[in-house]
Image (cartoon, rainbow, N blue to C red):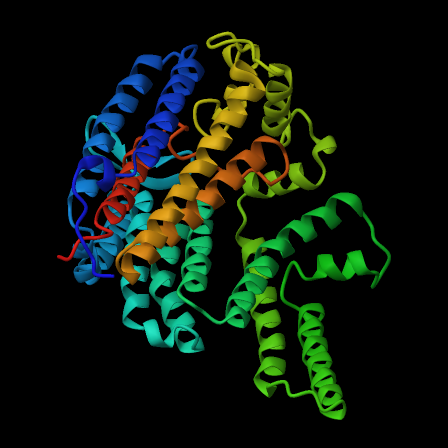
Length: 446
């Protein structure tokens, strides 16, 4: 069946998608207005939110109207500008709460790491299109990770671990949708899980075992907080176990490639060493967040205060909520960061279960429509861009809601389109505009 251009705006645009974006922005604006109302700088917050909303709307329309394939052609320029912006913020950026992550532009501050997230989606999509026939090769995974590594290093130098985490679901999601080898993706996931899980495990042992028995499992785990004989022994043990598994597979005549048995100890060693480095580089507040997650009852008024107040706020909202501008936890100042990271708790308190479920439902609808736009895309580049954006939206949604409910350690991840944050709102709307453009051009010939 030949391709044909559809006529009429109704057939060209996904109006369900556009209405979903508008609904989330509206709910987010109401939540920000209510959460920030008691704050002394309420007027400044609303002014900046409105500026970001107007700018984001313009960027959404721009992204929806401008041919998205230009980004594929100019991927090298986008990559260069992304790195330049991140270097610039380290050189002349403004520091806030220990993070040097903002460029002061007068009326508002701009966070280049938000731009880097979308920029890397476009750059990775262009790269994977060029290697479309070789996506299952390990070389492709290594090149893709190599492209992302400088961006991650610069963001971690700010330091902003939470934003850096968002790049891993982008990488995994896009490689998977591009047809990457599942073993390679599993290796990346295993490496990341060990690198991030080890500091959490060490923190748990330190809290629950003041003086563990010598050479007991908790004692050995705590000894891996620094590289020494215990860590070296664990790596050697992994290598020996892998060798034994290889010999056993030969005896049982199982045709498993030898590279698999080499990769397992290598990945374990890389993950373990990275976990030791991450544990050593953790800031005091980051370690407190891990402690609050693994043992919240140990410090209710300290490290676990944020999560505890968030749970109280959500639980007290009940089915229908207390009403807008009527939340006691938020308006009386018990809930910290209520207009940014913990805005979902404000929605739960003031709008109740129906409000939180409305936001969750709209987000799931949004992610579904982004995936649908990718499946309808006329080219591989458009499909991969939608895959990357759907991956990071799902990750940020899970992380933010999970930390508000105490299911995940607090990571400082805002809820896109809902939380206060001009850079996040504007860049997210631009990204969603590009998705609308991909959908609208699904039948275009040029």
